[in-house]
Length: 139
Image 1 (tube, rainbow, N blue to C red):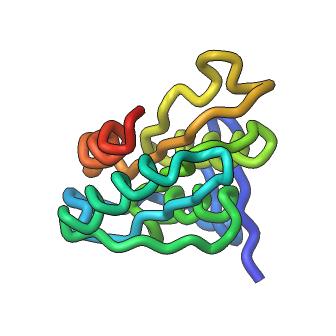
Image 2: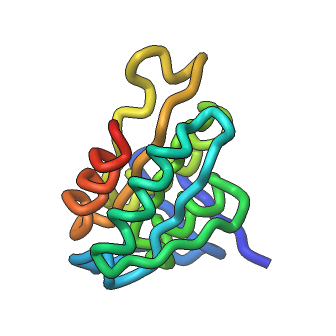
């Protein structure tokens, strides 16, 4: 069993031990979590996959955005891109990533709290690469 925990200003832990994001510097250095939503464009989805694969990356989807975000905080994934997600499915994970020093997009922009948004998170060394993946998908 695993227990992920986080509190603003105190860091984030896994089973009581501090978590740190990956030290990856390229998309080829680790696993990217990609989550698809039926609200997403299939063309945008294909563009994101194309960008990832063309840059040596691999992906995995565990079926839970919250868990994939926690995996970024724990250094298991180097980033996550969810095409469209509700706030209640990702805000705790975003907080965890931020507490470990990872980067996140401004999920709450444009009424994201109530209507949802895409979410993008990254280990510090792959922030630019993940932003390029996001842009390739049309965001």
